[in-house]
Image (cartoon, rainbow, N blue to C red; front, side, top):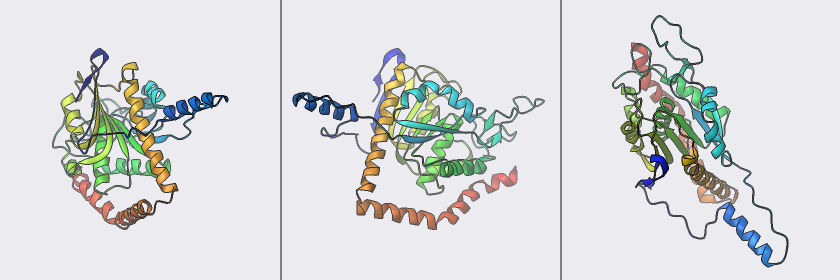
Length: 314
């Protein structure tokens, strides 16, 4: 269901698993602060200070084709400000330098690429049936950042980076990567057309996701982003009236705040369960982690097999 907003903005929130229903008894931090203040006034004492959020979810961010981590961070300044109360964002750069725009030109070191899906070493989101040169190296790069710069709870990507996030979520579902995202944000995303990636889309993904795309995007038409969103079960969509960019105006502000506020609440509830010594939760998590750890060598072999044929043909 879409809700029309200002200036052509459309927002929808839906879950194919079950509708998101919040218990009436559950209070936000602001609600709790208001209640505490009301009780204080009733008792004739001084008003209690407003509750402060001291923890945040941490999000690993993947840039688009011909961008890099620093450039992407700068472009998301307003967005980061909107969500800064609830989330911390870490930006990394792809390991590959993108091919030059013209055959006679030199590659620009600041223009990075996660992988190439054309025989000439370039990348185009609409390309179908092509290779995925360099993908395995990029996956290892993100896995290393997830491990050494973490802990992280979520992933965020734009364009090729959003395509990559979708692939990582699919690989995580099949336990073919050490990355375990609890949520994801995918802006101007799309399904990879590389043949070797098809198996990553075999199983629906249930983690909460926010999909952002423009009605007039000519680089990644919104139908491509909708196809990516269809791979997920617990989906929120933010559709804006613009093109191929990450929107961050007052029109989108509340959607971003709501999404990350919900993710932080889920994270804190998760932490509370762990700290309370809930035996069934801890034992279940440990057993799953042990199973994943024991199969890590097999997982590495399967991921390597996904790109082996492509590396030989390169």
